[in-house]
Amino acid sequence: MTSLEQFQELYVRYRFQEQRLYYQRHRDEFADAQQQANLLAGLFMIAAGLASAAAAAGIVPKTLWVVLATTLPAVAGLGQALQRLYAYERVAKLYDDATRALTSVGPQPTFADPNHALAISSVAGYVTKIEQVFAKEQGQWGQLTAHLDAYTAEKRGGEGENG
Image (cartoon, rainbow, N blue to C red; front, side, top):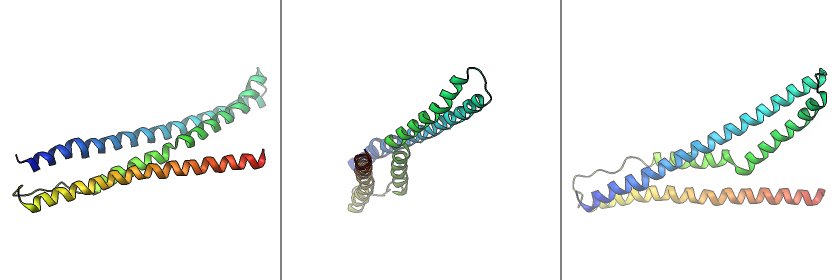
């Protein structure tokens, strides 16, 4: 096995495949977190509706049902606010976009003569495409944090005007 073939094998195994698996795991993790947050908020709202119905029906202790009917929607809202703060959906999309981009790079190059200049050029082009995907993914984090900073500044500005 030539040094070019060894490089390509190691690069694909330890850089490309490992990074793709990392993106896939994190995409799934954040997508699951998004679904769990939505489920919990929905359950809190259902519980609030049931507590409201129990309070309206006069089921004892009525005070407990009134307190639950008024506090559970606030808890659900807090959960949704935290979900937005952590940006589960956006982060999952960033990882999904990176995974798709890596998939679109295409198959690794094959060559008859690994010492030929065309073989070296093919491997270099393949590595460059993959590294461009990684660089683009890293750039997306800057856009995400800039968006979150702008959102936070907008909220602070709105509080200052009203408060």
